[in-house]
Length: 630
Image 1: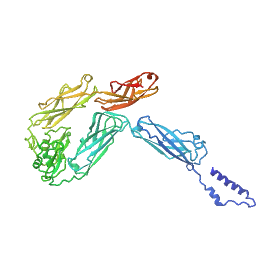
Image 2 (image 1 turned 30 degrees about the vertical axis):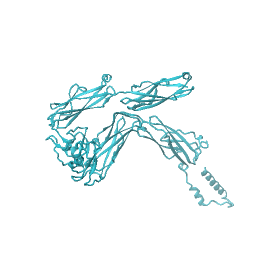
Image 3 (image 1 turned 90 degrees about the horizontal axis):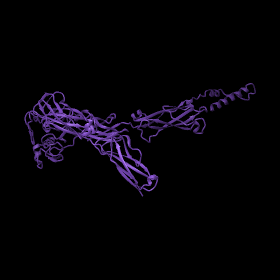
Image 4 (image 1 turned 45 degrees about the vertical axis):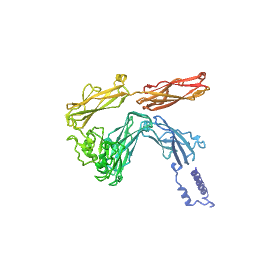
């Protein structure tokens, strides 16, 4: 409008000048420089005339964890400049479709979006599964008014996936300084999603533990409610290779419960200097599980015989208990001083041999075998005497080996030993699978095989079945296999246990029978009811009932809807907890319901609630609660 007025003034001046061209000379023509200035005035574009500012805001006061849940967004438009035509604006959004009020309902209530006026537009956004899976929702939005775009604004809200595992890992200690040192890794698995996870076996896979193979964490039928955690730990023993590096790095993930594996978490252990021990000193050493006095003396470079003499309080120096404090004199007088532990633990893996374990930890193979009774079993731990490489103690088998306080007896020429384990250790439903693991060990003094070793177990098979491939078992060596038994309906209905009675055979030798019982787990619910207040005195009064449902059985119940039936309070069952909750053994859930005193109820002197809880296929005993009229 200002430009139009300016042009009108210029035209008027020119007309007046033209009128005086013929005479009088009373009015002079405008200077040429003035005309050029008028002609050079730039033409303004829409972008020069209109400026728009857009901001966005999302309601973050609640958790967003369900598909279809509404997220409320607000988009505020502020007109910071408007020199455009005086016409109703066309407001168009890109990136979302908010609902805006009429233009004549804001500011001065006219049809024009004037400079300085603001407008709030609203958007109700229903969450999608993709939003939950991404753990966040972001909307990038632009608004166009009078054919001019605003800035782009982005509003973000966090979402909680329905199924999400997170893992935390710590190390004790957080550094290392010698071969054989034991590091304890602690793992915390958390259900960071919105839905219960399990029941089932949760596992951890750690690059530093169990040859990077998954190992169990928690019970075989663990359940995790939203926000709940379970913990476990694993040991790592520092190797000679670790001492050649500046640090040990490991990564771990958690899995289970029907969720995707967790994100990786890493822990780095830095190598540090060992605490200094003075040569020639006499020290006090606290015994840990698996140590013996000769090995403790070797550990500190002390004389074993003088160490025994320095501990007359020990009834048998070959048998000392963990926690006992012993004296080690003149350390470093008989070898290198090493820091404890003097004995470590190694979890036997498939393919391990006595020689490979001894080499890994710098131990003497003969002493290693003697310290473990010459028994090497996959999945079991053996104790490792550190700092003993070079002792050259003869390995068992060639001839009896005698060390102070330790006597070995020649094994029989032929013999087999069978060990049986069951997983899970209890069953809770018909059709449930129980996995039996059979470990066969050659307890003889000579090799057995090559032979096909077999298992006879009438519970899982009508006849003998092969255990592993044909092989030769050297003395002390093992082989193993598994078999699965599914609990029939009639057994589940009528029996309290199932029994495996198994023997192992191979190379003309049969083991002694091994019996293992697997019991049926008991499912049970108990209900606790309280009323507040426990008396009533008027119509319309409210009595608040609290119900606590507890799983007092041995197995997880659910997932499903737990309910309370209380005809005094409600004509229909009262839902307790979410519709798909799992209730582990020993856990409980709480819910509430209100009773309003009506004329009919007030006419009675006492009111009795008789309530039962149900869920997971189990119903509790009835609980009676009485409230009295005052």
